Length: 117
Image (cartoon, rainbow, N blue to C red; front, side, top):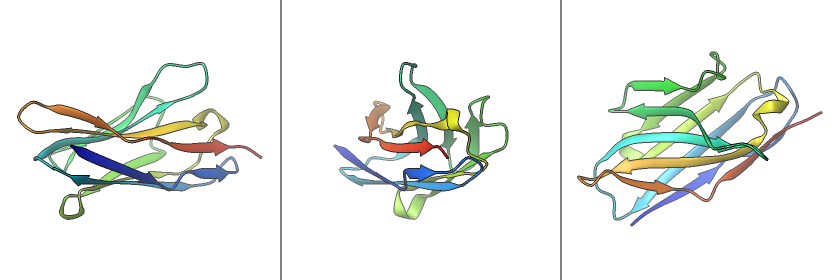
């Protein structure tokens, strides 16, 4: 089983930046996709960003160039650099991996990001 440990959330003012990290550990098969999702209060979970095969990146429409996902495959770690944060970015951010022949989905426990003055 894969364990995902997220860090880097917190309270930040509008226009500020945060960097989220997620390290995968445990019984790790090859990881094909690493991603960040978020769920805001009263809203559905949505994709923030994903990275596959080390270079193929995909972002939610709302990102609009403000966030960047990257991965360190040697460390089984994915990062999300978030700049120009807005109050509407307030949510719990979850790390996700897709791994192994069965394309298993694993999820972290989530880290709270609050954007407020």
